[in-house]
Length: 425
Image (cartoon, rainbow, N blue to C red):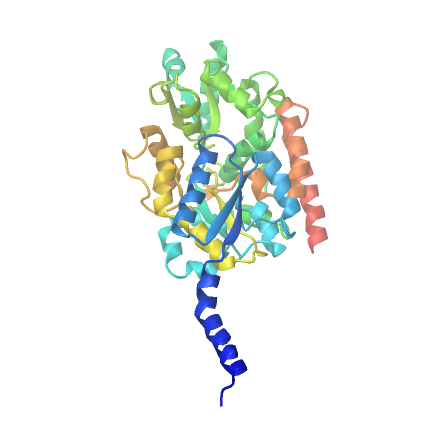
């Protein structure tokens, strides 16, 4: 028979069974989300995305942290693998992310992509997030490098868009002789020169050689195309503004926008930024863009474009991998991608996310340039092993100022790569 104690025990068990589910379902999961956009409207937009997600997922709280570009690079290196590592965070695909993958700090999300998610992306935009056959991230915005030129200055000097590198050099000389600064260039932070070099390497070095060289375990950089790329860059240096290593990229861009030079080399993602910051300028009326021309006889591919998507990855140490990936899928999906294009001018990697008319002609045409390219080639500084880039960046600034020769720069590249290769093997 049941006594009073047994009845009380059974009641407690029943109550636990009845209420344990609902109580657990209401528990709040907190995800830490870190990105690198501190300026308006990008920062506000990502805050809005987080709040929208919370509304649709009441049991999830997204803690958003924004850290500007260069400090972000250092911060993320320090906190990954610690208890302070964010669950979802921004990262540049390529060697910047690959080193974290090798250290088991980034989650392999291949299994999550197999439900058809990966088919939503433009293959060339998703490809950079793969490493040794697995997928480790998703693109948030596409990007590439182009020359933007002042239409009025070109017209006044009877200049047409050059189709070859020799024609490009002729244009630069003509502008200089007319008393116009041909190219506004700021290289205080030498990622800027790496963008020039990345495009010229893509033009001068066969892709199979390049892919082998950017792998730290196999990189030798012996192909003569590297010296040729440095030589082609050296040919541009007489046409820059004075002391490019002393000014920032932002200062050089401002100088160009104010009419101080005929052209400058920018990322397509800077176009919406310019439109927002300089409402006094009609970008589409005053400016246009073109790809860096291909050097005739070069051994690389004229249909490659330097530039890479940027995106987000999930920490391998997250307590909530499923929930983190779910948020990543929302963040980089079509619904948010359409809002992103409308509110920030950035375009993510989802197929058909915008049609002509959804954004300005300048943003749409530049994005089509990326979509139509045969292959995107990573920024040189991001593609290289960190030790190789640390040595090369110094030499490239010397080359910019005329204190190093292309062969001397190439020798440092080869020697540093050999040291890294030896350490890894």
